[in-house]
Image (cartoon, rainbow, N blue to C red; front, side, top):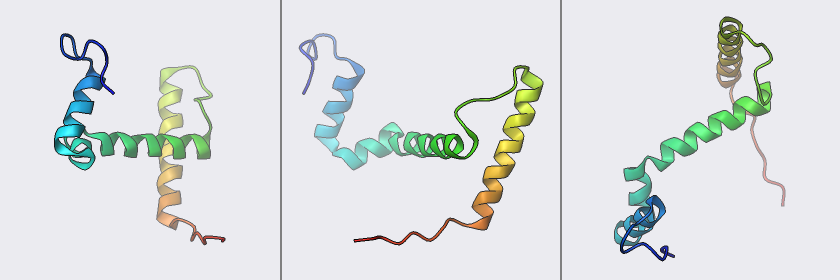
Length: 89
């Protein structure tokens, strides 16, 4: 649903709603970069799940090292493969 000011001062949300209505949701996702954003959010979620919500150290140099180690850990986990999921019904 468009905002009350959509015809005079459209918001970013109004623009997205119009594009979705004109071209469809999948075309909007491609044109807006939505899928890239979803991928990044998924990566951040995996980071937080595996390594925690925040950095533990305070200085920039040590935080850089902490992030580098975290990246190595996550990449190693990817190299080992994802666990095989089985749906239980």
